[in-house]
Length: 139
Image (cartoon, rainbow, N blue to C red):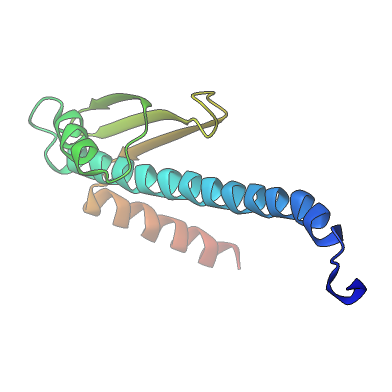
């Protein structure tokens, strides 16, 4: 009968190893959610700024586009604030959010700030040619 007796060492080891493995998995998952949110909101901010520049004659088009994009987010952030301003020459958007990994404690905050100025092709090309002429003149 001694051959059928089992030791409890496997159970004791599992008590320590399984929670540590679960903790690592959940932290990895939470970090991936954080990176997803930051990249998604950065892309949304750039799209809003570009919309604000291209349709700058209208008032606050960047804000309207932000409201549309905010509804499309598959995994919305609970605490989210956005500030937009746009004109025909400049559009700026700032998005602040917080992801709460543990029971509503906001531990992972992020801020995305995007400012886009309109480029007029003719003046940009004149400046580029002027800089090229200066560089060639110094050689």
